[in-house]
Length: 288
Image (cartoon, rainbow, N blue to C red; front, side, top):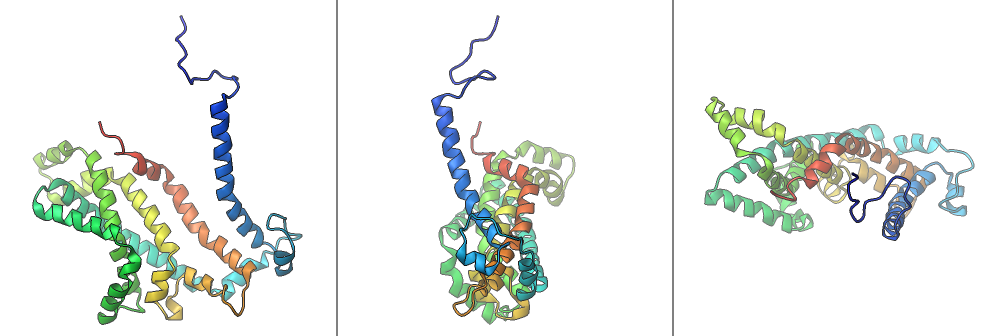
């Protein structure tokens, strides 16, 4: 005897209902709205300057101008700016993961007032926009002689990102069973062994979410990088790209090629950690 088909279930080959068709249309329109700017940037990066101004944004170039990418490497000193951006992002994200994980573990497991105060302190850090922290962060960095140094800009990114990292990790800690930690202590594991061997492997989805979100922010940051760094050899890729949009000279085709190059590493990172990222964003949303 066949099971009763519930409302909303569709058999193979059955035409879409009006509600399903409407949803598909809306999602298609939204997807096109997000894809269109990316395709226009990619299209512009392969055009000549003449085609940029005289043709439609959606019209294909007469010939692919790969030379725009070579110009981007030369004008932006891509070897140094790309390396600087990659170094700042990688080191800052690694430090955030190493600091936020143990901090969130201590806050989630310890019920003393001090740890509750620390959690509220980090929450307040999220509520305050980081633009409001420009002046105090710069003054601290200037007094400690950290401006125009690699360590200084890394310290700045860690300081502005640690509040969100602790909040994210603490929320995820509710899904980690306490019984596993208790069993590890009974087996003779120290505090460090319990965290690195038991807790840390279970935090992979939260860590992947933190890595992706902070990498996006740090890699694409312009305001903080331009504030803290003025030496040419320390500039980031985003700051260098902005120089192509100056009021005196604007080389849009080369700038679009540079934007395409700058997007590739973050796209690869997201695709590599996409599985953990989705799990980290959804797990813990529904308890029980």
